[in-house]
Image (cartoon, rainbow, N blue to C red; front, side, top):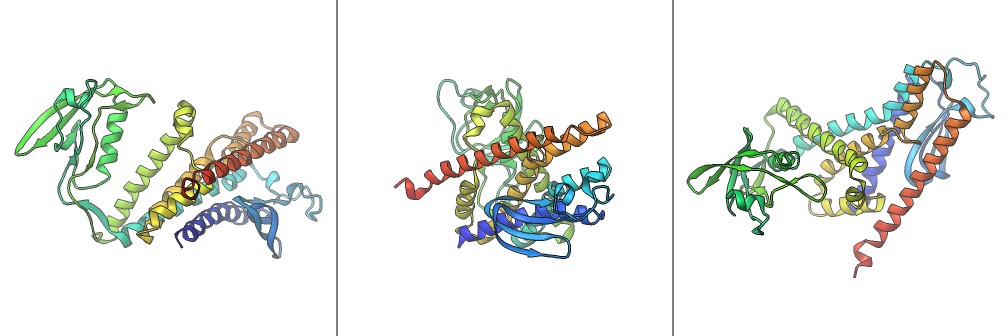
Length: 359
C-alpha cells in the first residue's frame, strides 16, 4: 500500500507539471496536439478535438507536444498561434509554467499539511545536545560543550519549540567555517555563553562534533486559524526551496560528495514508502519536497529540461533571432539521451540496493 501511494503521488506531480505547460499554452490560444504522461510506446490514448492524451510505457516524466514541426498537421506553418510563431515572452511563459505549477502545488500541499497535522512543537524550548565527540580535534568539546546541554540561541537567533530549529542551527554551523558562533547554553540551572568556531569538514562545510535533537517530546497542536496555517506553510515552503536549491548547487560545486546521495525513481519510492509506513499523512511533506525538487531540477539550464529551453529563448532574445533549428535539436536530443541514461543508471543502482537484495 505505501509503495502504491508513493507511485500515485509521483504520478500526480508529473501531471501537475505537464498541466502547467498545457494550460499556459491553451490560455494563450497556442495550439497543443499532445499531452503525454511517460515516454515511449503509448499504453492508452484518447483523441480530443485538438489534443491527443496518452499514457506511455516509460514512467520517467511526461511531455506536452505542439504541432509546429508535425508534418501531418493541417495547421499552416504561418499560423500565429503556433508556439514557434509567438513572441519570446509567450513561449517563456509556456516553458516555465510547469515549474511554477509544481511550486504552487507544493505550497498548497504544505497548507493542507498544517491544517491536517497541526503545528509541530517540542515540550521544552531550545536544542538538546545528546552527544559530544570527545576526540582531541572536537571543536565542541574544546569549547566546553557537554552532553545534556541545551542550546538556547546562536548569534542572537533564539531557538524555541520548533523542531525545524535544529536545521536552522545546522545551517549556521555549516556556513560558519572558521567564523565564531556565539551560543547561549543552558546547563542545569545555569545559562552559559560559549563561543564555537567550526572547522572545515571533508566537504568544505563547517563541523563542530556534536549531535542535535529536540529538547523533549515532539507533539503537535492545531493551527490558530487560517492566518497561522498560511504563515507556517510559507515558512516551511521557503525553507524547503532554499535547502533544495543549495543541494542542487552543491552538485556543481562539490559533485563527488553529493552524487552518491542522489536517488532515482526506485530510491524515491522506497524512501517514501518507509516514511509513510507508520503514518499515511507523511505523504504530504514528502509530496511537497519532491514537487519542489521537480521544479528546481527542471529549471536548471541543462539540455532537455525547461531551463535549457529558456536558455535558448534568452539567446534568441539577445541575438534577435533563434539559433539554427538543427543545432537546437541536436543539443536537446543529446541532453534527453543523457538524462534517460542517468535515469536508467539510478534505477539499476537503487534496485540493487533494495532491502530484498541485501539479505
